[in-house]
Length: 331
Ligand code: NAD
Ligand code: UFG
Image 1 (cartoon, protein in one colour):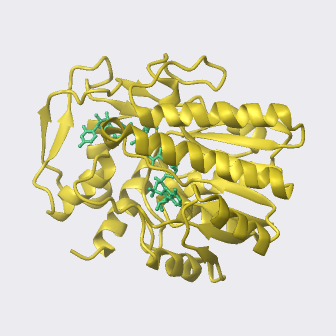
Image 2: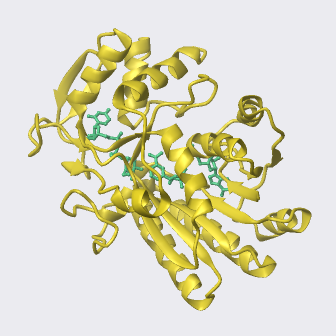
């Protein structure tokens, strides 16, 4: 199939393009490079040994999106494009609501105009708010603490209503837990601008000596060792789930948690990183980070049952691959 991948130059999108081409699909990337680099496109093609069509456009731009649908027979859309920094979304709510909601509306509208009925959407475990773990797809969603989370919950509702109005529209809403790691080639991975917000990139930069030590945000949570627990998933496992989601699309809206189902604390991740890479990670315990919850992990059984997908790569592989990628980056 010809798959339009919005945000395909980004972290999860680039790995997914590789997985899609490995499964025989053709990929058309639409990305404005606001949080990615043009050379990622060449790296994707290098790993997959296949050509990619790239449009440097903003997917909130109706006319630019229309040109893509005119130029190609699109069979399905995977919509990754979005702004994703939780803290920034509190400071710039309008940018987040505009970019994340309008992009979803524009792509869904183009699908309607061109009769494309396959749509896969990147949502987030953040929509569960502070529900009781493990999170199950059938749970009522609790308010999130930031505009970013709201854009995900709202996009889910928009797509659900569109699917109600069009019985042929098939939507897969994928709620990602905490993607980490990188492609085993070391060519593509996550390279955040500035000081990383997320744990794994922070740890790899401490390992590299770019940052002095890790600040562990709180050790008084009701968890195994008091530090925050998350469901880390290898980005290549996550990428592969999109192929399964496309293969198993059916009419209506279907929601899937994409995680391993296993919670790991901050200190457990640090220990795994040290073991996997034989490097010490200095850390100090500091105050809790505002907005953080104690525990977040998936009940991942629905994706296994309905998509035939489960995460295969363990924490050691996640730490090893994250480190290999960091090491391959220039200073
Ligand atoms: P990323 O920032 O690496 O990738 C997003 C890509 O979208 C970037 O290449 C960026 O340039 C592009 N983009 C943003 N706005 C655009 C626009 N208007 N038009 C065209 N391109 C645009 O982020 P990621 O980690 O790969 O995340 C992909 C998706 O998954 C996002 O929707 C994100 O919210 C969601 N998600 C990510 C995580 C995570 O921890 N990484 C967790 C849950 C959900
Ligand atoms: N943490 C630290 N020190 C750091 C960074 C993080 O101790 O320097 C801790 C956090 O307190 C948390 C855990 O490490 O307990 C994971 O934090 P991340 O920032 O890596 O990830 P979050 O779970 O907070 O957020 C991520 C994405 C969000 C998404 C959410 C749920 O960044 O976009 O997962 O899927 F909404």
